[in-house]
Image 1 (cartoon, protein in one colour):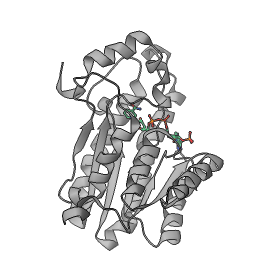
Image 2 (cartoon, helix red, strand yellow; image 1 turned 30 degrees about the vertical axis):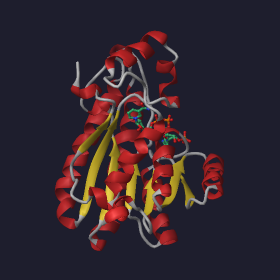
Image 3 (tube, protein in one colour; image 1 turned 90 degrees about the horizontal axis):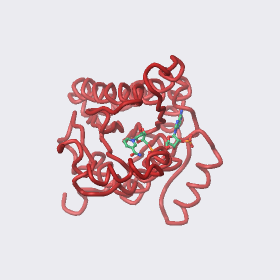
Image 4 (cartoon, helix red, strand yellow; image 1 turned 60 degrees about the vertical axis):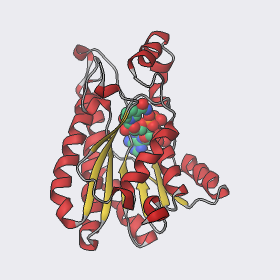
Length: 255
Ligand SMILES: NC(=O)c1ccc[n+]([C@@H]2O[C@H](COP(=O)([O-])OP(=O)(O)OC[C@H]3O[C@@H](n4cnc5c(N)ncnc54)[C@H](OP(=O)(O)O)[C@@H]3O)[C@@H](O)[C@H]2O)c1
């Protein structure tokens, strides 16, 4: 294996929610490791601009604009990626959103939106990818969970339930797909500076609480998630299956 341990040369990866934030950072890291990455998000023009940036750096990328809450669009996107590239080796289910309200103010539409965006989309895309990966006897599926897959905070009810469900789905898929040569794992990021967390970063009290609460003493940069995704997608992660990899500066293991 040697220096090829973390290489993704010749691999095709679909990353949802890769127009910015953690998805973009993971797609960049995988492209730097040699993968041809397919960037998803809802706006074609934004994705086109990202692909241009990638190409300028000699990185292989293309786009797959679709809304992950549209199950038919998810299935079609997987078929299209396979038609375009001949295969799909790596699926990263990362697209996500947030909704913060006291419990009694939550309405059912918001609940369903969180569930559809994080959890149902991962089921649909994972199933579509598995249909292709099972006959090939190989593949990697990576679910982007959260600290909230394991812990909880007030107001983020749909998010916490969906991310906990995603960790459950990771385990059930790993149990069923492992014997077919497909590794299914999750990453649980801690607190990263992205658009999703703007309200938290701009709240001085919360910002400094995180700095005190995280053993590493700071918020994370999105680029600090790339290595975990490359690891789980590469030969280096060949015997890792059904695992939740925390990338959180130590927050879930300390009080
Ligand atoms: N930031 C953190 O600290 C943190 C911690 C733990 C877990 N996470 C998880 O990491 C993932 C990425 O979060 P982030 O912080 O990078 O957020 P972000 O900067 O807000 O990016 C969210 C991404 O998801 C895409 N997206 C949202 N809804 C979508 C939909 N219905 N269909 C397709 N794409 C959709 C967005 O694309 P468009 O808007 O361009 O469509 C964007 O690319 C999420 O699952 C989040 O829960 C983040």
